[in-house]
Image 1 (tube, one colour):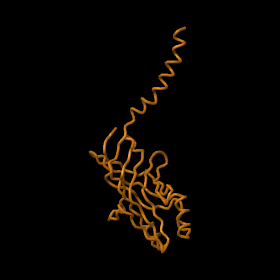
Image 2: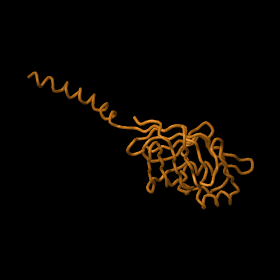
Image 3: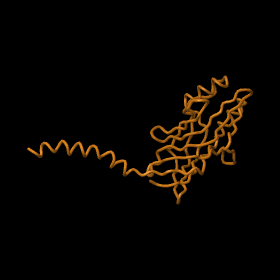
Image 4: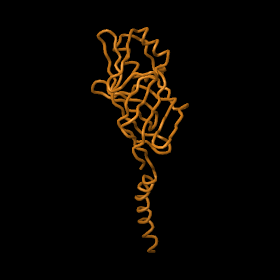
Length: 190
């Protein structure tokens, strides 16, 4: 009889402890504020911007280089096995044509479901790019982590906003903008 009374209490105690045990096993990688995510524009995206007379320029501290535009990593926390998580950046990208300017700042890569890249546009955070990790290659050596071959395509909301800002219909959901490479440094593993 006593066993029947204790069984529900033991079950409740085990259920209460289960999430803590699962959380304790999950290891994370914290990224240091070093490294960058570099976006190499595809030839098609560069030609499309040029045909629309839209110039793309980095917003400091982002920099343009031979491999693309590099956006400095400010922080990140990733699952140690799957690399799912978030990576935050500083700087941004300015798209300009005549008096029209659209600034995309402080990118965040989200890999916790449908991978995407969000940006601060004015006072709002907007999903700008869908990220395809199908061909991504992950390499870790010492404290360095590199995720290369991430295909970046324009989201529908971003395409609509850019079309409205620049008075065009050229931007479409799924427009391939290029390939991203994350080169980060591990601060510590939990």
